[in-house]
Amino acid sequence: MEGIVETIKGRQSVRTFEGRPLLPEDRAYVESVIGSIETPFGVPVEFRLLSVAEHGLKSPVVVGAHDYVAAKVDRVQGAELALGFAFETFCLRAAERGLGTVLLAASLSRKSFEKAMEVGPNEVMPVASPIGYPAAKPTLRESMMRKALKSDERLPFSQVFYSGSFGTPLSASDAGRFEAPLQMLRLAPSATNKQPWRAVVHGGVVHFFEERSIKESALGDIQKVDMGIALSHFCLTAQERGLEGRLITRDPAIATPQGTEYIASFEAAR
Image 1 (cartoon, helix red, strand yellow):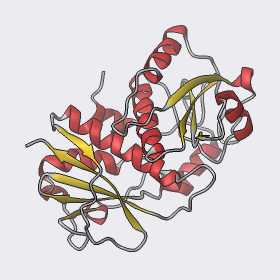
Image 2 (cartoon, helix red, strand yellow; image 1 turned 45 degrees about the vertical axis):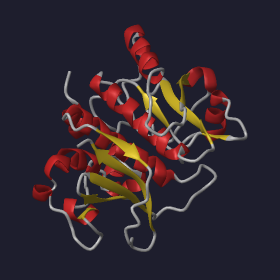
Image 3 (cartoon, helix red, strand yellow; image 1 turned 90 degrees about the vertical axis):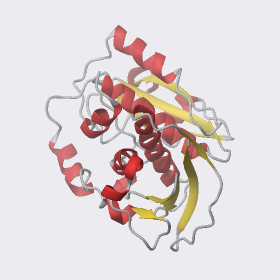
Image 4 (cartoon, helix red, strand yellow; image 1 turned 30 degrees about the vertical axis):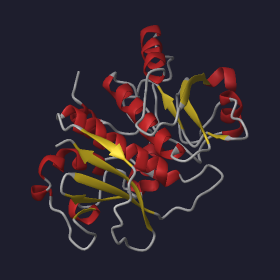
């Protein structure tokens, strides 16, 4: 099995599937993974594996999917972060198994998904993903979508990461023990590839911020889901590289650009 760094580097969103159901052993794997994911935010995330045929699930951008994985969470502080962290952890574990996924928000038959998930009035289901075997070739539509969204492009390291304050860009060569986790965070997927994450490294702490460019909706702050995704990349890579530490929420009172807000910090063990 590949390490998490190679999995992150190699994974791509999949919208075109072979059109066959999951094998029993792969279905059991998925059920096991979604039943065991924990997050550092103290917010429970409920996953379900859903049949397209049973629940009438649809997405106009997905071809050949027999099943979806969806997740819901209570509308509480940290909900979107927890859901993003948990869902991306699942997607990476699925990729390790050779299974394709793509997080979808707007392009879902939302009523049928929310009915299947039994979403209550105080719960939210921001995203869902098809799960299955990637087709040998994506459809022309999928290829055009990836090109239009510039899905394979990422902002430069020094444009999203800083040293001490937002006025001092951080180079990869100066990031030290945080370089690999930050590089993998930088590769995280995000809604319309907006890449809202920013980070300031100060001593043994990395402070994470969200640069808001998408408005909140009835589904909550979708960019906080993106931040949860990014933090999963950072934490899983740190764990694999033996970088011990913990996520905390303690605003460092760093001056931020307009539209940028503090999210959390990773405090490395001494």
